[in-house]
Structure formats: C-alpha cells, structure tokens
Amino acid sequence: MDARLTAEQEEVRRTLREVLVKRCGPDDLRAAARSPEGHDRALWETLSQQLGLPGLALPERYGGIGCSVTELALACEESGRALAPTPLFATAALAAPLILALGGEAQRAALLPRLASGELTAALAVPGAGLATALALVGDNRGDWAGDGRAGGVQARRTDGGWRLYGQAAQVLDGHSAGLLVVAAHTGGFARSRTLLFLVRAEAAGMVRARQTALDATRPQARIELRDVRAELLGDEGADVPAALAATGDAAAAVLAVEAVGAADRALERTVEHVRTREQFGRAIGSFQAVKHRLADVYVGVRAARSAAYYAAWAAGTGAERVGGLALAQALEALRTAASEGIQLHGGIGFTWEHDAHLSFKRAAGDELLFGPVHRLRAHAADAARLFDAGEVRV
Image (tube, rainbow, N blue to C red; front, side, top):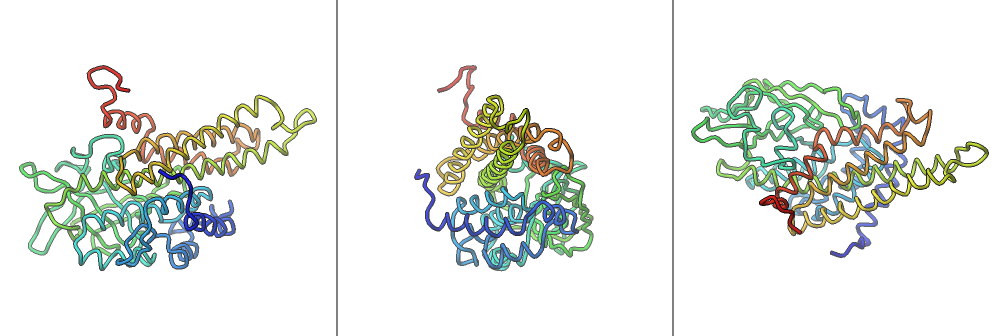
C-alpha cells in the first residue's frame, strides 16, 4: 500500500475544506440541524452538483466519477472535520453501493445517475436498532435481525400487485428526508426464511416517517412505519443479501472511520488553540507538562487511528481484506478521547452544553450507539480472525 495521496486526492481534500470552512461554522451547523431536513439544502446542492461527491465511488456509466472508496472516505474526512450535517454518508456509503451490487440493470440505470447528481437522496432502513448487526459489524448478519416473522421487524408479503411491506424501522439515518428508502425485510415465512431488500419511494402510500430526537443533531435519524406499503424488490429473490450487506458494511465502516478521524483531528486542533492562549498562574496552560502529556497521547491516538482508517479504506477499494470494523473501533475511540480531553482542557467553558467541543463529543457518542459499541466491533473482528480459537491466542 502506498500511503501517499495522489494529486487528485489532495485536490478533493483542499477544495472541499475550503467550501466547508466557509459554510459550516458553529452557528451554521446548529441552524442546519434545526431545519426540517436536518441539513443545509444549499450546501448539499453545492457538494453534489458542483463537486460531485455523491457520485465519487460510482461508475462513470451511471453518472459517477469512477473513483474508489478511498476518495469517498477522504471527502468524508473533511465533512467529519466540519461535522457537516449532509446526507452524503447515508446516500453514497450505504444505499448507493447496495443498489449497485444487487439492483437489476434497469434499476441501476434509473436510480444511480440521480443519486450521483444529488437530485435524489437515499437511506438504508433496517428493523429496530439493528444497523450494526445488519451490516455485519458486530456479529453475523445471517440471523433473525430482519424480524423472522415476529412483531417488531419488517415483513414482506407477495401479492398479485407486487410486494407489500409491514413493520417499522428505527434509527434510519436521514430517513425523514430521503427520496428513496432501501428497506430490509423478512420474507418466506419459516419454511423459506430469508432477508431481501426493497425500494420504497418517499411518496409511497401507507408509509409514515418521523424524525427522532438524536443525541447527535448533526446526524439526523428517523423512525419509519410501513403499513401495507407497496415496494419494489431490489434485484431478484436469489440474491445473497447478507453478503452484500456485509461487503457494504465493511466499506461504510472504513468511510466512517476516516470521517471520525477528521472530527478527532479538528477537536484536537481546537484544544491546542485554546491551551496556547488560556493563561493560568501567569502562563499559558499549554506550557504545563501535564497538559502536554495529555495532548500528546491524544495526538498519537489520532495518528494511529488515521493510519488504520486509511488502510481500511484502501483495502475496501481493492478487496484485499475486511478490516473496516476494526478501524472504526479505533477511530471512534480516538474521537471520544479527543472530544473528552477537549472538554476538560477547555475548563469551565468546556463543560457548558453550548460549547463547540460538545458537538464532537455528541458525534463520538452517537456514532458508537449506531455502529458499535467499540468493544463489540473489536470482539467481532477477533472472532472473524479466529484469534482465540481453542482457547489459545493466535499470533
């Protein structure tokens, strides 16, 4: 692996950072999070129509740019630095790869160009609070997480007019504003039990969408209720949906890890700026050895997390190995540590709920609730590597 960024990758980072610095100040973030969509629509139009971010990792024949997961991850690193509330991750890292992997040619041709241009946004809806399980990040996703015919899941029933969905999904990222939902549902009864993916348009009759109050307001979530909703099967019934979800989950975890590294890096920068100017006992608090040691530990953690996240993004793009979950665990831990130390080293102002440091802390806690926790990400990675087979540690 060559760890150096290409000129094109550096240009993606530089251009995007210039835009986000101007458009994503603290007041802008809070205003966007309070809006009905949960994001700044004008900013999304700039990112999609002028910069082409949703189509970075999509093939050119479907209106994309034809880059790899690495370029998408670098774009998300900059959005993570700014904590920008956009539907980029839900659309480009979760929904679009599934449509590309499982959709028929007619479905790809109809949907992917619209997703690549930003005209259409999409979200992945899975039953309950099982997003991490569905993406195979914290365990095997070939179980009954889609409902298994029981209450609390999403069931699909074939009728003369097509497919109908019943049930509900919680914690759907950007689900309240997405124009298209990719819904995981259980079908086949107990004899032929399996999970399939279905496409549901925003205007579908019988669907109720409600935005939920989330810890991290910059990562809006919704609850989706499906009451005899007409749906379109994604691909065909013979598709290996769990395998496609696992592959998408690994790449999405790598992208999310790089995004978390961007947020952690910015949290560290903000703290360093503060300790250089805040004085106590006649000197800057950053000159005290104890403060230096704490920030040095944060710096090492962020650098290590960046190396792991970059490698995971590269591996996801080449199919070398699946280490996205492990990289995500390290990145989330680095972000949580950077945000926590930032709050403490900002002192009295840092503990106020309105301080910018809490935006980073909420992002760390919110992402861990959605995609973790960290110890389960690591435990699943260890199980997948058969690290503790037969009671012995493999080295």
